[in-house]
Amino acid sequence: MLILGLNMFHADASAAIVQDGEVVFAIAEERLNRHKHYGGFPSLAVKACLDSVGAKVTDIDHVAIGQDSDANLAKKVQYALSNPTKILNFIRLRQRKEATRNVRSLLANALDVDPRLLRFQEHHVEHHIAHVASAYYCSPWEEAAGFSYDGSGDFVSTMMARCEGTDIEILDRIFLPHSLGSFYTMICEFIGYKKYGDEGKVMGLAPYGKHTYCGQIGEIIGLKNGSFQLDLDYFKPLGSNQGVQIQPDGTVILARHFSERMAKLFGEPREPHTKITQREMDLAFGMQHHFEEVFFHLLNELYKKVPLENLAMAGGCALNSVANGKLFSRTSFRHTWIQPAAGDEGLAIGAALHTYHAVLKQPRRYVMKNPYLGPEFSESRIETDLKKANLQYRRFERDPLVEAVAEQIAAGNVVGWFQGRMEWGPRALGNRSIGAHPGLPNMKDTLNARIKHREWFRPFAPSIM
Image 1 (cartoon, rainbow, N blue to C red):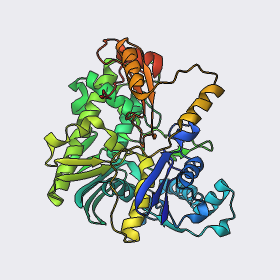
Image 2 (tube, rainbow, N blue to C red; image 1 turned 180 degrees about the horizontal axis):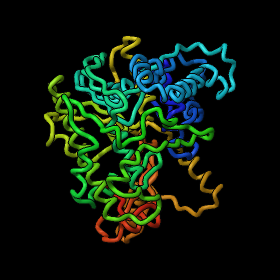
Image 3 (cartoon, helix red, strand yellow; image 1 turned 90 degrees about the vertical axis):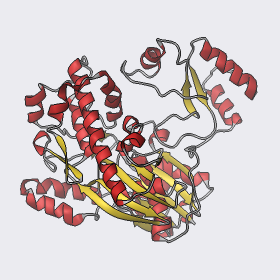
Image 4 (cartoon, rainbow, N blue to C red; image 1 turned 120 degrees about the vertical axis):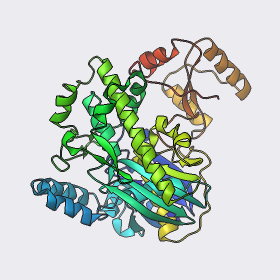
């Protein structure tokens, strides 16, 4: 049985292929078209998935999409009716999503086949269910607490679940406009980081800050009845604009999140690419502090409902590695399984596995033991491409290669390390990585300025190869 999982017309478009219950290949479209956070249809990723198993699209039995615009419809209608001035925008958003739901036609056009030859069944999986599924069904556990949180998906920002066997039981949803991800994004925008995906940058800025604004930021977000609540006066009203927009070329555009009240409290927002002052560092510190307070509060509430030591977690906010590092000291969970592609590219795997287990009632047999699910290249292919690029190269056997690389790193040089299959998810984990000497005082600045071309404060995660 072949199941094609998709995240499409959403940031970090991606595709994954599940064969008889096992994830055999997965890749984000941006890795193939070089367009960061690409939000269109993942046609190249679909082709790569099919090639990986030697299949044609006519061989696909099921297609699973990590989005269901019909999910939580009553909540959407309720919110729209209580905000009648925003109804027109809600209708436009709905129409925009409906225009992209014809999966059969989209696949037929992308792969140049007659749509009448496509025999697959189509499944739409609610956004956060797909996130929870992407973590739990890849874990080795037969039971776990499930948690997903991000900006939004299908009108939900946070989901708690009890996972057992092949079942995922939804225990709680936190609906928009209350969103821990939107809280983080709003403050990131205010301090000058306005692009989709910039939140990780500001997480790296937070340690340079102080407690200066913790009290004021505590007015923006607070704990309430086992959940949390935003003071919406600091935010542009939900539905007042077109939200996240996907441009025709797949670029993801964020509408402004913060209201004028932010400027009254903290001064004028910082413009991108201008000097970062202590104010921005302190705002980032306060943002991260309150993010963690709410995060751990929610996890402790989840533990009361599912008193197990295992936590399966995904969603874009699950990439906050600073918070993740404190999880065991701040909660009763003792084991975590966090989807490597915790952001929305992971929806492709989650939707496919949820369809296989929860919809088709097939038993579990797969454990994701490593994140190396992308393409690999033979030595002959690599050599051919080096010659095409007219690059000088020298060939080594394994042991001399490792010794030569170690000598380069010890000498203070920076080495690109390329081997095996590409990582699944945003982290470089040894197969597409940069090697450098962490003991040299200026190495972080060298990498940020000369290699990565990014801000001085951005950190690097050391690892042993």
